[in-house]
Image 1 (cartoon, helix red, strand yellow):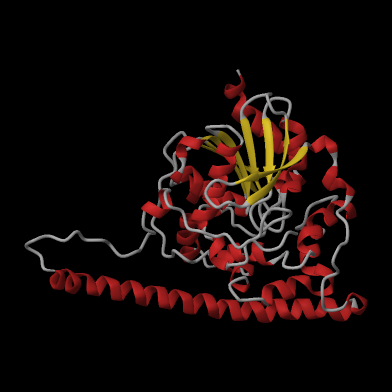
Image 2 (cartoon, one colour):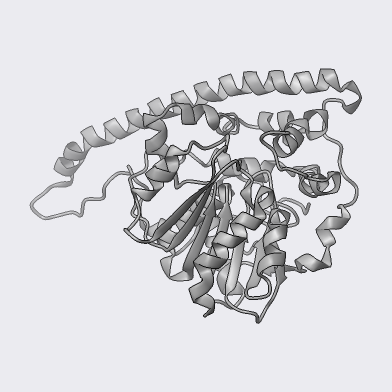
Length: 393
């Protein structure tokens, strides 16, 4: 992992820098017949209500964070007691596993981003074979989680799987404020344009799905089609969770990740056993994940500071709450696991209610969990080929 990157400047232009977050204070233009004092007095109640709402929300978030810390602390301690030889820290891997350099998956490269100056790592195959298909991963993953799709679609697409900022060999700024949604969306924009394209087929999973939903809203001209797997727009997640509190319990780890330094410590204890269990659990993990493939995910997390960037994504998750509903219009294929332990099935219908009619094609995969790109690649590929066929005709 390279040394943490110091560059983290806000966007000068871009949709999220122009559009205030939902729930933010309205800006009232000055008028000659409305003195500033009157404007301030009129806005005072709404400002106070918003501040009280945010204070109440953050009190709930940090209360939940403390409960989650106690639970995960017990889990991590149990792992240490059951495997005392591993100790309380994660073992740093000295060399990457061979599967990370598998030539059948594509060529490795780095791209310097226009907006931030950061350098992102990517794997690319099939240049010249068709439109750009850009893959955006989730947590705790990296570009390697798209290995099946890279092999499948490189014959008809230019496939590119990127390591988001903070992951793998990509630059990892140290400041929490370097992982806000608007900066992450600018990264995706810069990757598309930096690769020489004006639009792409955007394929995303988990955290990548959250970014993809927002990207399709704020940069619609850059997305021709979307394939989203196991992830909801944050505004949908917010409204659904308020009506279905059980969803909060499924996403309890998000509250733990609001705390400083402790999440990284707990995740690394007993040689990253919590992450190992997440990825390899017999019922909820990735089926048939080999030890070598598991190391492909753990290698970069094991480097100094390797977990901080990914966890910082979550530390910015509630920054703009409460969020307003947003209409979705990009033609999208949504794939959802029937047995996804992190997201309830009801979110699929909730997502559909926000779409322009006829723009969403949703499928629930029977027996599938959260890791569809790796656990059910054949079913995913069949749906994708059918969904994208008209682009290739």
